[in-house]
Length: 551
Image 1 (cartoon, helix red, strand yellow):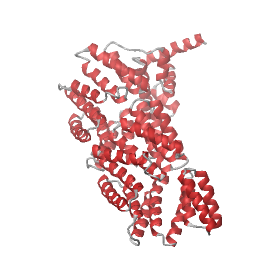
Image 2 (cartoon, helix red, strand yellow; image 1 turned 135 degrees about the vertical axis):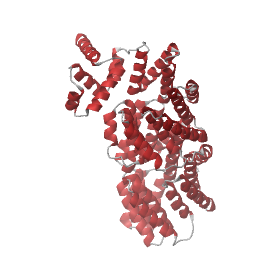
Image 3 (cartoon, one colour; image 1 turned 180 degrees about the vertical axis):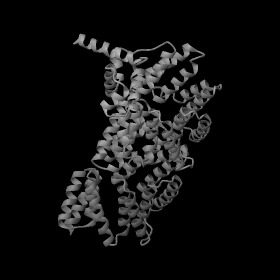
Image 4 (tube, helix red, strand yellow; image 1 turned 90 degrees about the vertical axis):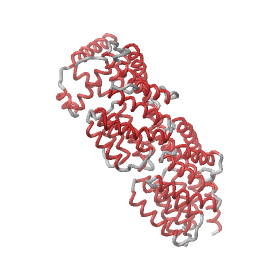
């Protein structure tokens, strides 16, 4: 027995040193001598860090049964709560999660209060949908943490409280709690690597929700370094999902695509249930890039996920299907009408949808809620989005003040002038000034076009080029830039147009809908500064002749 105990101690020592392979080896050796829940628990944790998630769950489930059989109820309860969350992270199995949490709380009824009581509560709180319930239960766990002097539990509870406050638009209070929690991690006060990793994840989620791009970037860099140092693939993938959103928001779309793709591949080999977040973010990016068919493929099968509402609505709007976009957004907003920052992106897109549907009064009501949320949050990102939306309403209604709103939006984005949002504000300024200040409109449009082309926002670049053409100031990129603006599918469509094929004939050839082909043709004309299919055919033939000549 002493030999087994010594090997288990060596395994725990390896875990403390983040030597996951050594820990695995020691716990496997311990199990050869004696089957104990402590050895299976340690082996399961080592396997988790090695991204062998299914086997990790198997070992920790056996450890749970062993602890329960030995009447070590605190350890059994904490493990049951841990396994509850993992059911969602691995297979998105909410029913299994609820079952494990029920077992954990049943065990709490049979034991005396202790630190593990707090762990069950905070794990449960972290999975709650209601931010108010999350905040309440997290406060209970932080009280337990302080009573039993458990800094790991206190730190994670602070992070969950911060996340709940941010969701309720209490940005300053939430970020104060988040920063305090992160100080506990960075300073080394938190000893458990798993708790540190979880705190990073909650922090990144809260920063992204708050639209705090600077803080998101800072904590993403810290989290990625932590993940590299301790070989945590779970944290690395989660970081890259959040980092991908940040890069997309700030206009670094190629880097965003790489980060999200890497996150998806990592989740494929581990916590498969979490890959959906990265997939949906990549789908949203694909829509912005004008790669609509790819976005549709990514979104297929996720229509029942609430988090898919934004990219699905954006896809419908890009295809001119405003009614479908409106239905998706309104259903998502009706599911939870309480003030929450989760509503802000949906409201922002709904304004565009309603204006595209010629419903200015409904758009105005939507803007009112968006303005309220932005003022509560005091986030520069949300304030800029609200100013942009108010400017669009004013311009649509022919009211004074649109230019002032757009300029206010740019002021809020002063450190993110290269973002796609800033470029869209510049495009709106150009549209507003088109009839009253042609020179000013052209200047703003060229600034917007430069940004869109650098980012790779093909649809927006096409719209901007169209506006410049209308003002008699078409800006045509050089041949290489023109070619790089077209996606592979758009280049294929251009070639078929040059052969004189109709949209229906092209659709049949490519096995897509005629409406999709119509969209591709519109994109090609806009990007290349062409007026019609005849010019497109002439352009393709001239480029083909140049290619043959250079060859």
